[in-house]
Amino acid sequence: MGTQDSEEFKNALKDIASHAHQLDSPFDRVRCVEWCRKLAGLSDDDLESARLKNEYIQFLRIQVRHKFLHGPFITPPPDENLCSLPECLGNLMVKQIPYLPRVGPISPILYHKSPDGRAYISTKQIPGRGIFCYMAVSPDGLRCAIK
Image (cartoon, rainbow, N blue to C red; front, side):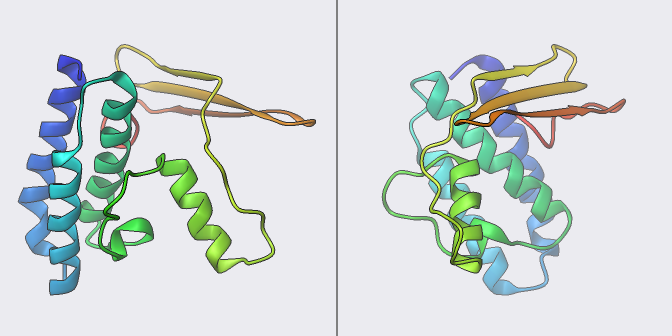
């Protein structure tokens, strides 16, 4: 894991630790700890696994700071490997809306975050339909929300 990725992960863990006690439900606090342990225990040997860890930890960080867990964090982390966060969230939607097709591996064809952390862009090909582009800009930076 790169030094910046490692620092972002550690900072997110510290932030979660300082806010997790504010979660109302003791079950949510337990889930938060389980997910932090799972993510901290994942390998960070390559860029892809480092990105996976940071996607999940930043999403958990946002939820803990808002004192409400949802999505993948309301259940214990899986014993097997984690899929990408977009794939995970897509599959959670499929469970709620059964007529949607199951989501497979998702990988952007372009991913870029500005050096100052104030802008982010990601594009993904939509087969037969073009591309989907997501862009976010913030004067305060996007460091806590997007890796």
